Image 1 (cartoon, protein in one colour):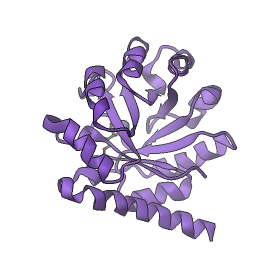
Image 2 (image 1 turned 180 degrees about the vertical axis):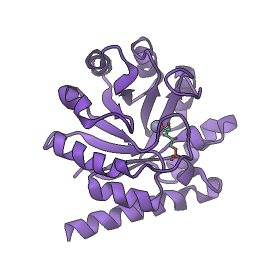
Image 3 (image 1 turned 90 degrees about the vertical axis):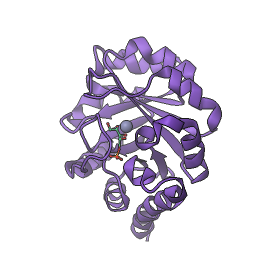
Length: 227
Ligand code: DX5
Ligand code: ZN
């Protein structure tokens, strides 16, 4: 299995000092930075655009995992690539043509992710597996941080794992991840964990402890399963 990655979501950071926050979570042990982009149309919230991603880029060498919750999406893919995204994830429903959107991301030289909402069946991605580096299983409905984990995501992770087989595709889970839910989704096959509120709670002096609590809970499962 791919090495475990913890990806703090800056949706829960202090937006008035995002550069400092990104540096702080990098130093605290983040493996990548999860950037939630919302348009007030695909989801009922508005967050950040490519200009902010570009402004954050000099603050860390960490991998930028950009989660686009916008529709239509194609119009903006080149802007996020140019802004410094390393991986760009597209929601299945962003439309109109998921396959084309993923081809475009790959064509821009970036890793491509596809996102399953809680109501989206795993079968929706069967025909695009050759175009993705990551499948993101949403364990909340997209739009806000701090929501409760939806337990059906655990079984969905297992289904995705079965579908991808030996392909080198990461399985990421996003929403309501804390040490307890991290252990549950890793046991089902996830290798990349997004966490917003669980990482940013308590302020910068807590970030390293918050990240390592999630990592330890997840690694305990991996070591148990390997034994
Ligand atoms: C929700 C976002 C998540 C969110 C997770 O639409 O995609 O990345 O920030 O936040 P927590 O970890 O607080 O559920
Ligand atoms: Zn996200």
